[in-house]
Image (tube, rainbow, N blue to C red; front, side):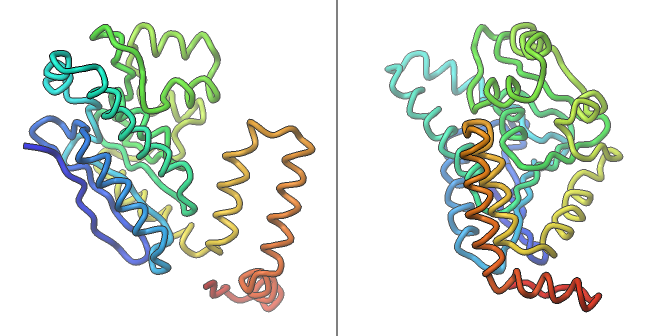
Length: 259
């Protein structure tokens, strides 16, 4: 049975739950397409200010379905290439989505599941969660942008160990390395992710969208280009109605009410 993305909401937060419990929430083309569709709808919904991605049950995501991958070996290579294009479209939609996206991780985040968590803006993980780039254990190489994200966040020696040896790494170490934002009690990842979402939901959506765009572009920009972009975003946000509301609320010592 193909997996699915279940969409629910809590206040101004959309919760996307990977639901493929028979295969520990393994990913596949249907999930990729539904993930992109859900984010496209949420982008145009002003009632949604943040997104949490989690897995059904005790596992965040086991990555690719090895049975499906084995079957794809008997098909033309273009079949698997198209499947990976679907995965990459979902990862790209998360990175370019103008609202905060939070991964709530319980259990294992393996292979593309690890890449999925890395694509999010924040990672809230249970203290006993395990992250592993398991590709080399089955003679494969990474996808989903995992090698890109890890290479920009961690020392080369550690990235090489994680990718080539398929070493497991736990939440406490990833938290110490700065890749996990919240190290929480087992079973509390979704609850704590929603608390973080509430904090973000109280801030001006246009300012958060600007910050995400600036962060995404920073590594490719020169300092001069980045400062030009900062100037453009700052001026635009100052003249946005939320800019006036934010400053006035601060001066009046009251909570702001952003559109």
